[in-house]
Amino acid sequence: MNYFPDEVMEHVFDFVTSNRDRNAISLVCKLWYRIERLSRQRVFIGNCYAISPERLIARFPGVKSITLKGKPHFADFNLVPHDWGGHVYPWIEVLARSRVNLEELRLKRMVVTDEGLELISRSFVNFKSLVLVTCEGFTTDGLAAIAANCRSLKELDLQENEVEDHRGQWLNCFPESCTSLVSLNFACLKGDINLATLERLVARSPNLKSLRLSRAVPLETLQKILVRAPQLVDLGVGSFVHDPDSETYSKLLTTIEKCKSMRSLCGFLEVAAYCLPAIYPICSSLTSLNLSYAPGIPGSELTKLIRHCRKLQCLWILDCIGDKGLGVVASSCKELQELRVFPSDPYGVGNASVTEEGLVAISRGCPKLTSLLYFCQQMTNAALKIVAQNCRNFIQFRLCILDPTKPDSSTNEPLDEGFGAIVQSCKGIRRLSLSGLLTDQVFYYIGMYAEQLEMLSIAFAADSDKGMLYVLNGCKKIRKLEIMECPFGNIALLSDVGKYETMRSLWMSSCEVTLGGCKTLAKKMPRLNVEIFSENNEMENCIDDEQKVQKLYLYRTLVGPRKDAPDYVWTL
Image (cartoon, rainbow, N blue to C red):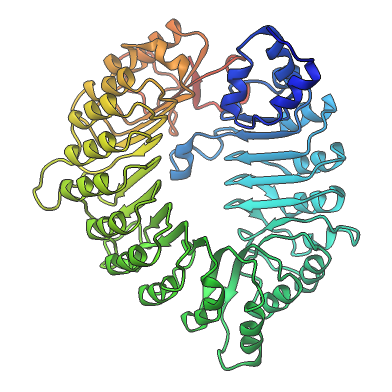
């Protein structure tokens, strides 16, 4: 079948970058499998316990870039105990021992240690990129090792990590010869920063395009950095507080006007609203604006700022903008494709929160919207139907009502018909999160119409096992299913156990599943890891098969039960 030399096919395969497409290519024939195996350099692993590093290297000996995820997604909501697992050191150890030419490592929800970072810095001479997202376990000593020893480093990206700051001198460890940085993000660090060292590092990095600063970097230093790096495309502001009548503020105004390449702005971890006019000159060029960490900006000032941002494609913002502010977004940002509205007070019932009114306005003014995360106080079926009619290109739709069982605020009915309209109209939805009063009917709609759905998150919903069965039977492409506080029991869990081998994972917490049901599942499907656990060790000595399981996490794996499970995790 193959009329071209292997070298030609390998070159053709280099143009196929999607992991899904590469997987499909490898299934065509044995020759294509071999060529794809030897030529693949980038690998994504959605669960670090699904495969061992040894098997990964045996399959892809030329791997240079690895993306690896650890803890389940619900760890972001404190539903996974702190010491559950997700350790990356065993992976680093095997990769180092195997002498692969690792250049990029991207980790999410993993436990990273200083020893691991030190090993990375000593083992991979061409290491260029380290991205850590919501990781924990390391300190600035580990960052110092990366800075000192990775001489080709282009990217150091620290997003929402828990980092212990031993001292504020880790930036000093970048050698004077380091001129390769393209992206540097240390916004999550809380300790002091050597400001003079930071300025020198930026000055000798002519290719620096993305820089995100911590709150320890004041406005004076920001001004000096922008003088040295007018080529920045992405800027994360730390502290933005100063006297608008000062010389420093005046200099900042002049400097910002020269930043012609700026396209993305975020941060403002400490901000004085009266300083915001300083960034107006670059707003007309922005395509991305993230103010979700800027509670110091009142809604009125947000509205003024957004009126200047006519080209925005991505906007992350707090709900203090209000419905009227979202109306301004709708009238100003006609190119908007992604919107995330976060709660400024997720535990309270504030007057500033947005409602269905703001969402309807967005749907009417932003027809190109494809991704939505919307925290709100209330919602109606009528509003969701309007949204479904106006925005048919959603790929991600996540709506979170702060009272998760609240019905339609106008009719007091369940929100089934509104979400049903969303999945009927938006044929391409791949990720969906629901909240509000919901019955089995909404899951019937999801199973019937959400043909492309890959990830579904639900809580406090449904009437019976039928809800889960509708999803499992109808959503042929479902890969991740996350369920909390729903009345789904053994019938739903065991009706189609073969389905789980086509999925990445299933999470169920505080449902009606019993220990006996989990044992039956584990017996029927030995290639799945079925983990049950309780933080108070309720299951440790339990022999009653009727005992309800507090948390169930099952996932497919090629390597059997993991070896680092804590005592409270029971692998069946």
